Length: 197
Image 1 (cartoon, rainbow, N blue to C red):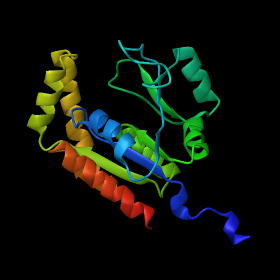
Image 2 (cartoon, rainbow, N blue to C red):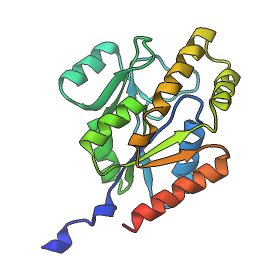
Image 3 (cartoon, helix red, strand yellow):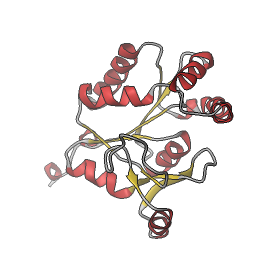
C-alpha cells in the first residue's frame, strides 16, 4: 500500500513575497520558465478593475465586490486582504492549489506578506521565499520609475516596505534581488534542493 502515497516532495506549495519595488513580477515570469520543477502560478482574485493589458484568469480573477464577499462567506479563500486601504480586496482561492496539484506541478503563489503569513499557518511545510531589494533607495527608485503611482501612494508603499522587511525572518529563505540572473539562479537552487529532500 505504501507505494500509493506520493513522496513529500511530489507536491509543494511555494510562496514568494517581497515589498513593492523588489522586482517580484519579473522574477516570477523568469521562474515559471526556468525553474527545475513545474511551477503552476496560482492566480489571485481581486475586486480592483483590470488595468490595460491585463487578462482575466492570467493576471487576476477580476471579481465584483459582491462576488468576492460571497466567496469569502462560503470559505472559498485561503487568505484575503484589503491592500493599501484603497478599498480593493485580494485573495487566494482554495481551488487554485487544487488546480496546481491536478496539473502535476507545484503551487506557486506570489502574494503579500500578510497573505504569506496566513499560508504558513495553513501549510506549515510550504517553501517560503522573501525577495528583498538591495536597499530602500533602489526600492524607491523602482517605484518612481513605474510612473503609475501618486506621491502619496509611493510614500505609503515605502512605509509598508519598511514594515514588510521587519517580517522577512519569518520566511525559510531570503533572496536579495540585486542582480536579476543571480536572484533567479538562487531561487532555482532553492527549488532544486527542495526536490532532493
